[in-house]
Length: 349
Ligand code: FES
Ligand SMILES: [Fe+2]
Image (cartoon, rainbow, N blue to C red; front, top):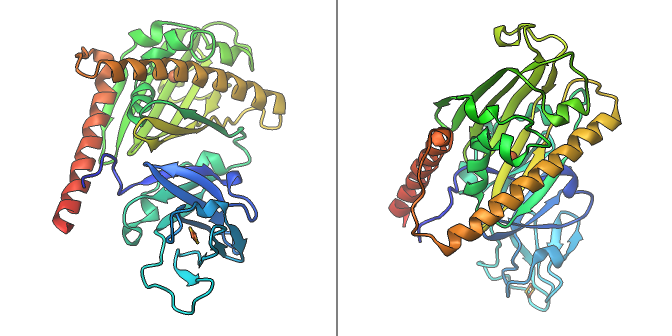
């Protein structure tokens, strides 16, 4: 059966704090139930959340050291998903294994490789360094969207919506839609660079700092397969050199956001907006976080409504406009990756 998702890539499955102590976290990724937990040495294990016996969720089971005992009929599996005990019998059926996934924890995100674990290369994980640094504080965010993951990727690849969807939070000006970003494509990501020169600060900027007048704003980001945004954005008084690389009294942010399909019609959205000013001021951390939560709720309302429409009218055409440049490039990149994945699979079948 051909895949509808790219499998040979790293997806964000959880925030580190969600997999704590002896807990078993149930999370659906690409329509597959997965159980995540932390071994005694602190590393992350990921396996199918479906007992090899009769399919009960292992996340409803019990930790016994680094193993899990299914609490339906008691079979026990090691952290690689291999059955090591069947109550009432000595022989363990050789096929009594659950699938193991490669998982890596990095900078407070837990990444999972949905393809063959033997081919997983952690070097391919996008660099989200700002999530792991005490001098870039943030509060971790998460939303579940009732919409296909690609519609959220589309949204993140086209910031022209900021002036409309987020007028009172991230936007403040419709001129974002008038400014043309520079869009380029690399092997596994699309790069978007956008300047707003001599404009107004966003409402969320003015809640955490005051500016003497107008400002320059920038959004530079790489959007990686399969839906990971790594951004440098900022705001600085206009005429003080930001476009020439002179960063002075700026507010700088290094946002990381990841969209992971839960199913074909729902998606996990992990996000954070680390900043490097007033790093000890929790009120500012809270203020930035609260604005972002409101903004992403604004996105959610719009995208879920869009998804409902598209479900009802899948054959009605869409009309492309210039603002779609980055999302069109990313969709092409994803289609190529999906075709490559499926070609490999077809050869192996
Ligand atoms: S379903 Fe797990 S032991 Fe029976
Ligand atoms: Fe948005």
